[in-house]
Image (cartoon, rainbow, N blue to C red; front, side):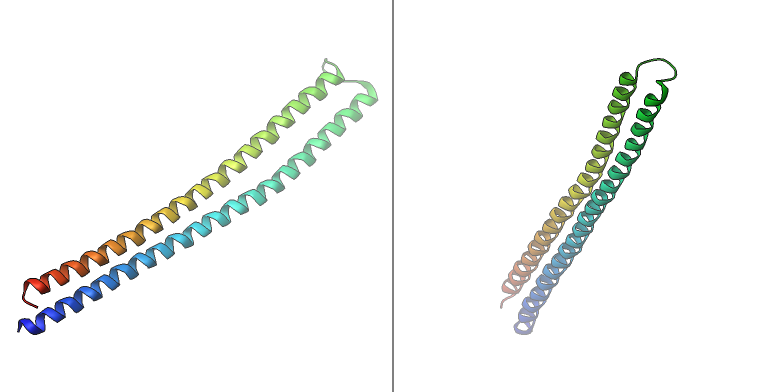
Length: 149
């Protein structure tokens, strides 16, 4: 009886090892696919952000042009000089562009960080599958040997 049981135990441990390793690979592949999606989202954020920056610059140029035209036509209403008004407009415009750029880069960085985390999780899942496979193989073989293979 033990002559049949021992090879079956070894075969069972080989199957368990193969299953654990396959599961680790599948999890790694799923995490890598998730990482690719995070990277795609980061690129989309940057592309959309570039469009937002162009639109912001266009609007800022319109306002600046209206201010220059108004100043040429008769000065600044509400006090202050034309130079002060343009300087303040330029300061606000630069701050708006900087804030938009920061927000875009921050969101893209978040997506890229998530991609790195997903890849790390995939590597760990693969290693866990390999360890589980080795454990199944060694414990099954050890039990078969202990039972008198």
